[in-house]
Length: 137
Image (cartoon, rainbow, N blue to C red; front, side, top):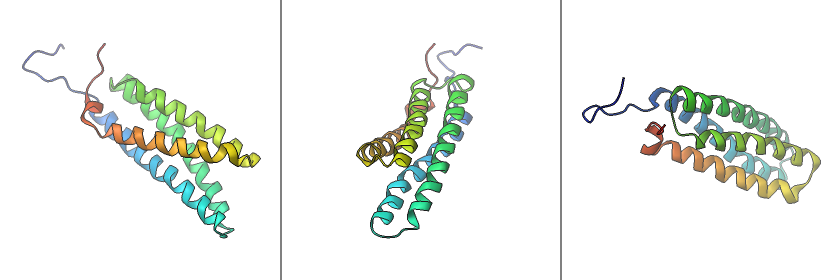
């Protein structure tokens, strides 16, 4: 079926809705990470365990976000760059975990700031009108 001037091209509606839900959950967990780290630095020793547990949730959601982004791109014919961003974020989260366990705070903190910014920007873009348009072939 081809689009005519009268019929609008339907974009990746369902796949975008799922991707939005996953990215919002992921963003909430990513934004919570520095809060837990701050609580630890303020003297709440148990917050480090919560920070570690949440890092596992963040990593898991990162992988889920990649899978859903693949479906958004190929199944829903969405834009390609959110998949690239999701893969980059998921890989960087794995690096971030390694730097956290090694205690390399000089890399762990700025990398964490970068991850928060990247995830929030991806999430915000997915709620823009352009995210619902089909990619051109």
